[in-house]
Amino acid sequence: MENVLILGSGPAGYTAAIYAARAGLKPLLVSGPQVGGQLMTTTDVENYPGFERGCNGFELMQAMQAQAARFGTRFQEGMVTGLELAGRVKTAFLEDGTRIATRSLIVATGASAKWLGIPGEDEYKGRGVSACATCDGFFFKGKDVVVIGGGDTACEEALYLANLCKYVIMLVRKDTLRASQIMQRRVYAHSRILVRHGAEPLRFTGDGERLTQIWLRDSKTNHESSLYAEGAFVAIGHTPNTQFLKGQVDMDAHGYLKTDPTHFGCSALTSKAYHHAPVPGVFVAGDCADHVYRQAVTAAGEGCKAALQAERYLASLPAYLGEAKIET
Ligand code: NDP
Image (tube, rainbow, N blue to C red; front, side, top):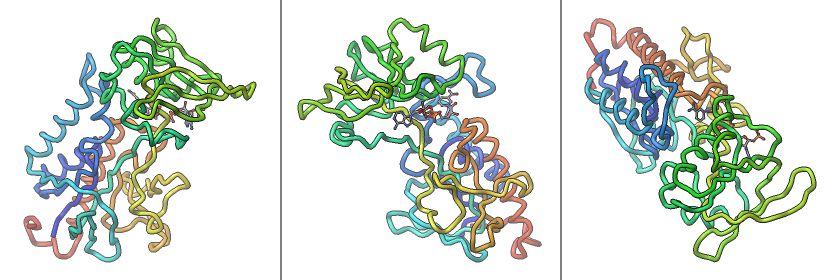
């Protein structure tokens, strides 16, 4: 029986683990399919406090994991497919058939990159179509590539690729970029990045082996055209990793978890079974419940709050009273 089970290995999950481990609760963290979360594929993180010159996302996550391990967090790789939340003991079911029983639970499963869902995308994934410039950009050194999207992620991908590739064309469906002002300025000022507005992706085509073209529709004229590209980087946002909770707890139309933010300042998962009130002992942190801020620092802060709240919850359990610590 676990005291604290943490689902997710992004900034929220690791921060929750650091706090729970330092409180002597010996947390178990189940990492999910992408160990370290989204920051593992982010090169420059310039806004995480404490790093005057910025830091590398991969290194930041490795350091968070090492910090969590140092205080006694245990790690398990695995994909959670379901949860049993009723009653005092919660159970997590993993894809490989493992069941983990726990007294408290922190859901910090984050979000994953979205795909366009257009013809040719699946066919050329890994053969020209990618959702991660830092993972795959190297393969397009000196070549022409496109980046699809107009948010901060797309700008970041374009700037990264502009250091490697011949030309980067950003395909943006609206007349404006959604990205922050500082990123917009950098993109527009870069001599090897061209921003094409009003471009809606229709399909990817290639020679059967590799991607060669992306087909576009002009959003004003409806005119169809194609663009030569050996690489296409899809950077159009994220989907919360909450499918395993569908139908069981409150979530919005996009799958972001609904929480009770007044629950001692900590996001607690709410459920219809509990009349939309917080499920006792279950806390939520990070992007799986946040479509507004979606920052590493806000996720880390929520991970901290969730762990402190889990600690208080455990201390309030009758079985805990009189014991120095619950042993696993
Ligand atoms: P956003 O939701 O901000 O932007 C998504 C972009 O993709 C928009 O331009 C959107 O267009 C476009 N898009 C969506 N669907 C399609 C489609 N089917 N076809 C074509 N274009 C499409 O997502 P991001 O991932 O960029 O950013 C998410 C959050 O993370 C933001 O808050 C951002 O600030 C933050 N972030 C911060 C970073 C940092 O601080 N270093 C780095 C990256 C992200 P439209 O505008 O028309 O809807």
